[in-house]
Length: 151
Image (tube, rainbow, N blue to C red; front, side, top):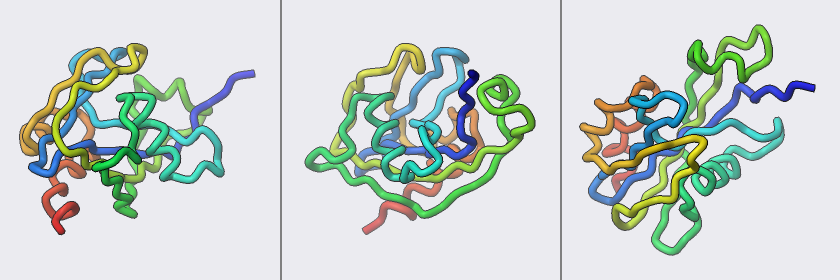
């Protein structure tokens, strides 16, 4: 039996207080840089749990560690699933609904990559990070950081 991905996902922009953003290079698509992303494991999985799980799986970071601030932006966007990933979804599924989160950590750290997902990492100032990502929704989230994280 084929198990397809659920077309509901999270995007977690990991950043520092001075808006340095963690960028991850996809293993399956070298040159494609992104923030942490991932789909729900079950239809009833809470979005915040998906965000916490994906951060841990893709970076080894604990979203609940002291000094870390996980923010649910309560914002989502639908986008057309990229051709190279359509095979992961049930036939006829054309769109994904992505929910945005951010995770503020005190300073840039070297993260533990999941080798099947990412091959490289870098920290960039948010305007440079926004220019580097391939996804328009990821770009828009990074560019919104100054407004979203101000106290």
